[in-house]
Image 1 (cartoon, one colour):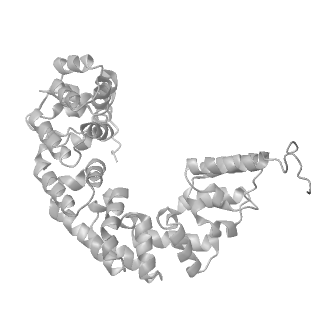
Image 2 (cartoon, rainbow, N blue to C red):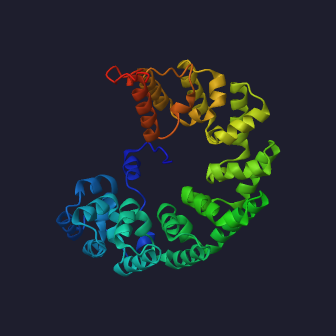
Length: 375
C-alpha cells in the first residue's frame, strides 16, 4: 500500500507507477513524450488519453516498438480494434523487443497452437504475454515440466495466463509444490488413477496454489486433522476448497470456526458437516460471516434453516435480498420453505424462478378439455 506523504511533490510522484525497467534495460526515459510512439498509437486508434491518465510513463520511453507489436498481433489474426484494445489496456507491450515478442509467441504456441485462441488469451492477460525476456528459460523449463505431468495443454495455457509468476520462477519450486500436492493426495487416500484429474482440476481452478510454500499446505491440513476431520474428509475438503487451503492459516481458521460455532450454536461434529458442505465457513473473515448471518436472520430465516443449508452463506447479502424478493413475487416464502432454491448461479436461480412461475400459472384443470365418459 502506498504510504501517505504530505508534500504535494511526493503526492504527485505517487501517481507515477514504478517503471518495469526489467522489460528492457536499454530503454531511456525522457521528460517529453515520444512523438513517434504517440503518432503510431493514434494511427492504431488507441485511446491515448486513457494511457496518459493511467500509464503515461510509457509514452516517455524510447525506443518503442508499436508497429512491431501491432504487426505481430495482426499476423496472429487480431483485428485492428482488438489491437487497439490490447494496447490501450497494456501499453507496456510497445516496450518489448521484437525478438522477445517472437520468443514469447513460440513459447505460447507450444501449448496453444491455435493462433486465434492465443489472441483471445492475450486480450485477457496481456501482461502475461508481454513479459520480461529474462524469464524465457524458466518459462520453457516450466512448460516442459507441466507437459511431462500429462496435463492438458489448455490447463497449462491457463496456468501461464492467470499465474505467470509460477512460470517465471525456477522449475524446481513448482516441482516441489506439485510433489507435495501429490503426496498429500495419496496420504489422504486418493486413488492413483484419479490423481492426474484431481491435480489438473485443482491447478485449473486455483493456479496460485503453486506460489505457496508447501509447508503451508501441510500445516493447515494438520490443523484441520486436529479439529476432527478424517482423512477422507480432508481429501474432500481439499478438493472442494480448490487449493484455498493454502491461502489460509490456523489462526484465521480458528477464529472463523469459533465464531461460526458460537453463532450457530452447533456441536463440533455439526460444525465439521457444515464446513464440508460450505467451505466458506473456513475462509470467510468473521466480519463477512457476521454480515451474512445478520442479513439472513433479518429476512426471517431461522438459524436451523441456515445450518441445514449453509451454502447460502456463500451468497452476498445483496444477492440474498434480491433473490428472496424474486421468490416472494412468485409466491415462495423462504421462511417456511427450503433455502436450497436460493443457491446456485444466476442461471440456476432464474431456472428455479421459471419453474415456480410455471407452477403458479398452471391451472388445476383444463376447462376446455373434453370430459371422458365411461363406456
